[in-house]
Length: 81
Image (cartoon, rainbow, N blue to C red; front, side):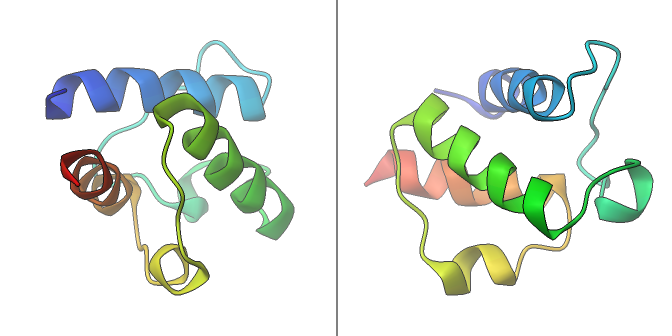
């Protein structure tokens, strides 16, 4: 799976979590950029990504994420294992 595929599928996770088919994410997108991206929805995003990609994240890994680009990098690293 390449970066573009992960980004596309992660966009679908965001759209599902926020119930908004119009959401478009960029590598620089962070919680400041999406209305309603609070701690609860952050957990929902992590759980949604785990389910979508068949991976598991450690709390410390997701706590360090600053933006979508870093989330994509983490997913790709998990998929390579």
